[in-house]
Length: 160
Image: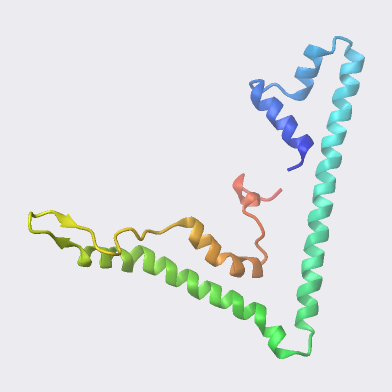
């Protein structure tokens, strides 16, 4: 998101749903100048979105060219490195998910001890819980290999 788009969204949020055009018409009394300013602002937002899309396309083309160049290399080790890293990332992700959701709670339950006064003392594994940040960090090499760069596209229910 660029600065102009962010400013336009912030103004709309702060002013209770009023757009930039409504705000400009309140402050600039000359309707022609207000309309001209709003038109320039809209053009800037459209140009900014276009530049953002062009940068995204250029990045995707660069990544595609790099991956294609890696696949056409004669060095077998280099050709197999990225898929191997992605595969190992998936294995670790699955192992982390199983360990943190099933094994660690069981270990915490069975290593808990009852003290002489009847108080249950937590075991060593009591603090281990599933954390999304760790899960995504472990899965990120595999997700990157599959082409996922950001989850913003799915945040609003679809692609841009």
